[in-house]
Length: 144
Image (cartoon, rainbow, N blue to C red):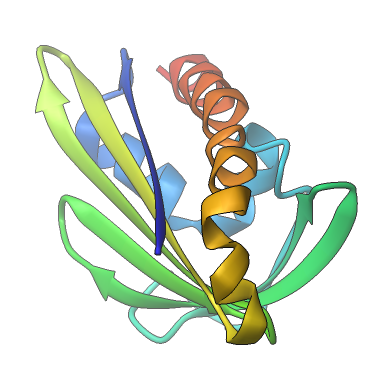
């Protein structure tokens, strides 16, 4: 398994930060590696809510179907899958002063023969974190 983490602090209060990040359709606003996310479910975000996402990875666009598998007052966890990977994204939001601290963890489990290449692919996955965390901070601060 490949795990990528990042933390950002924002001036946006924790409840508002979680509301924004839990609405996964906002991801293209802050993550350049995920240029397309469409909601497949109606109504407010809840466990079971599904999304169509297109991620850019090593010059190719990959489609994943994500589902919200956990939603609390401080966490949202989504599970995405396609024929080559299972991705579990966990976003933990905590108060920090008058703003918030966001811990983002993405776990990637490669499928089939790709499991063998996991050590070689780890740097490519980890290179996605910096731009995403920078974009997340900018998007959250813009809403503060």
